[in-house]
Length: 154
Length: 80
Image 1 (spheres, rainbow over the protein chains, first blue to last red):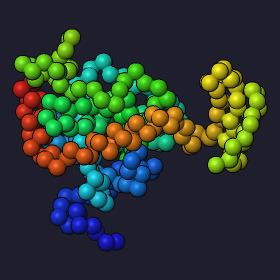
Image 2 (image 1 turned 90 degrees about the horizontal axis):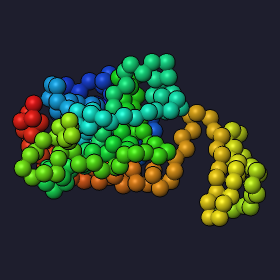
Image 3 (image 1 turned 180 degrees about the vertical axis):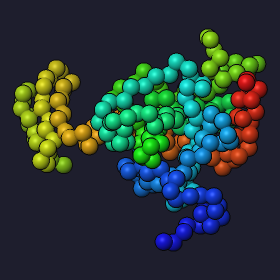
């Protein structure tokens, strides 16, 4: 097997850790293999990096920033992830879009990325309808306080 | 593109196992029943397109990601 450039530069990348998105991710349908990295130990931020290109998504744990967040997956979706028997390995991430200013960072709560750590499969959840939007400000809009949303109304 | 007329209650079959029923028609709105295997995903097109756009945008501003991340992390730490 030919190791790709990224692995040569980065010997830590272990192909056994690859997460497979069998259908790709909408807009990146051809990219099916990814590595998941926390930004650092315990961080609520994560990178999802393609194993085969420079594609990289920045994601966050939605529950850290939006404690009331909830999402309900239909059975067929869980089947896709090999999670119909057990949902214990499911991890939920929201894709972040960075603005020109970091404070403008938004989180996509409508269509989270779901990874089943047990089967190492992933898929973006596309709802039929949602009470959430594709863009929620990650940080409070008050210029004085840079508190994450999580602390609003707590 | 195949174009055909269906009346309320009539069906269309796609392939071996996808069946679409016209359940109701009210003015400009058509209610469809879609029966497909669990492995087939059915999405509302406009929602799917919005998600595609949003995902594209999410990878657009990644050039100076390293710097932005440092700022983000600073904010998170400040609030811990």
